[in-house]
Length: 264
Image (spheres, rainbow, N blue to C red):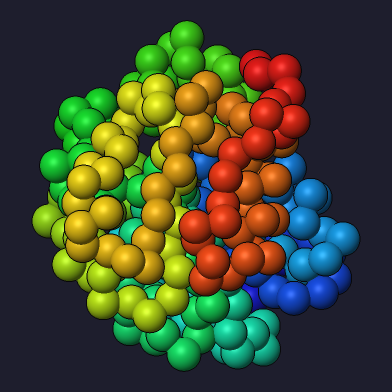
């Protein structure tokens, strides 16, 4: 276990591989752990960092820091401590919101953003999550349902560690947020990745993307639900590696038949 002290609080992270840095940010359900298959895949060419946000995984519980702005500051301080001047960001759900706000506030430190299962507006958060009250320990079952939750043991393992207030308060913050005005103003490429069967986050409107955001593109994974990195691991990892290689040439991104592998 690796950890550093930021603002007098313990921040847990793990790092795998050698090469260019890339930072992965988890969402509301889980922690750094569900990024392990992605980190392993990138390790031959990248040093992949995955951190636990305040209130999640093995990072400290800080009841006054479960806001988007606090998580943006945490990411900044983490990069400073790691000596990372600039890097691509990959964020899932809440992590995608944090990554995009960080890119808007500190564009000189971000090469590109992949936002996975990320709500572009509060209205994209489905009732299963927006109505989460924080009662009980099993957030994954309450949000996804017992049958779906059982297919994600790596998520359930860590989600039970989360401070329920971290989920509730950060969801409330995102419900008031709207990234649709923020993304077109960014001068970096943004790839939005969504599972077509996601029961938690509604994918963005394609017409809006085509009309308003020249720097962004959405790709939908047909067999994925809320965790594309676990639902279609091979395809997701291939897509991420291609995105990191082509950088701002988003038009060249496409899903290939040979990327398919047996699903869960």
